[in-house]
Amino acid sequence: MLYYLTMVENNLSPSAITTNLETHFVGRKVIYYPTLTSTMAVAKQEAQQGAAAGTVVIAGQQTAGRGRKNRIWLSPRGSIALSIILYPGLVYLPYLIMLSSLAVVHSIEAVTGLRSQLKWPNDVLVNGKKVSGILIESSLRGKIVDYAIIGIGINVNLKLSDFPEIRLTATSLSDELGSEVSQLEMVRRLLAEIERLYLALPAAESIYREWRDSLVTLGKKVQARSGKTVYQGIAESVARDGSLLLRHADGSLTKIVAADVTLSD
Ligand code: BTN
Image (cartoon, rainbow, N blue to C red; front, side, top):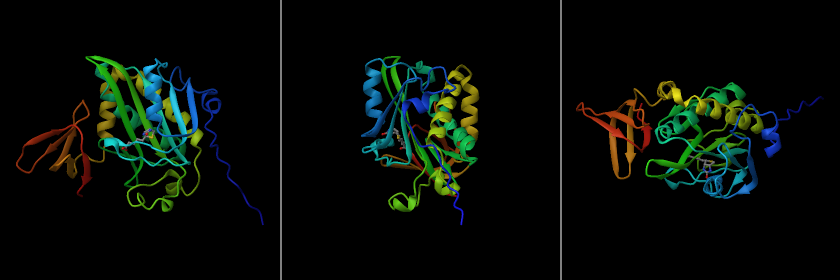
């Protein structure tokens, strides 16, 4: 009997990532750790020491990965965990979440053929389950952006049955596809997409529109939980600063900057 083995490229060494990478500055410098607490922490140190724009910190696995609101982000081997250091102008800061989300959607589709959707504010879903999360952290001095860090986690080759704590709400590319995916190809595509969209920021309106039109949240009845406050209504739109516009049953409108959203239908 013949066995056919599919070999996928999962070597995330700096040279594997940077060789012939189709970018001008994103990913030209890559700092790789097989195991790290969080790429956000190291990227922050690098940024404070003036790392070049586009420097990438990437980990084979994280032991203290952080999600939004300081939640734990599981990133075992088989997932992608990386942070990118940038120095955007203040006006472009709200667009980082939009362009990163779109870059993840585009790269997933380019590498795997899978279609993904966005759930406000920062979740990428495949078949209704979270496959990727994005965290933006920045340091401001008045109106000057000291630095901004885009943190991206993608569940690439994980068996969600091994992670009962997130199994119901999360998925991975390999679970959806039924075969392993090249982490290297995903990372290289992602970096190229981030740079392409970042360089297009002077035309930020088109990034905003594509992001808005990709949100599965819009037009849906939702519950948005922000601290102890729970808002209910129809997710009507998103503003250019990234906030959610929620229409209540009495016709009033609330602008929500940060919340956890559950789709009610
Ligand atoms: C979220 O959905 O809450 C955001 C998750 C962001 C996870 C990524 S993985 C790479 C980077 N390092 C971290 O510790 N967090 C981000």
